[in-house]
Image 1 (cartoon, rainbow, N blue to C red):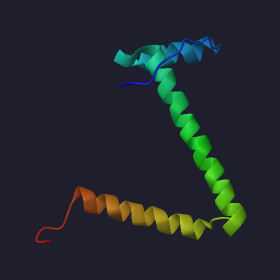
Image 2 (image 1 turned 90 degrees about the horizontal axis):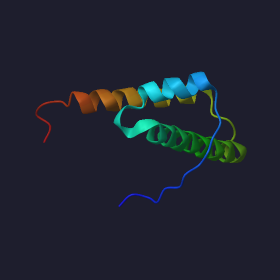
Image 3 (image 1 turned 90 degrees about the vertical axis):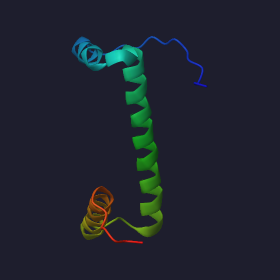
Image 4 (image 1 turned 45 degrees about the horizontal axis):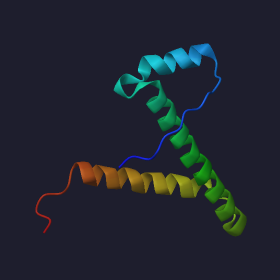
Length: 87
């Protein structure tokens, strides 16, 4: 079951609205905008979590970021091309 919806009026630059409408596909402009807002809320929540973690543990170094990215790339490569013979 989907979440209840409400009707809202927003104002945005016309060129952005038209570009969004052109890309919205079958979900329409409302669905496109709702998905964009949901992604922004997720990013805002993540940024808040990062700020709390950095306040408690200190900032993340570039070396730590690079190491995690390499781990993620290895995991994705493994997922895309699992080794044969693994049991």
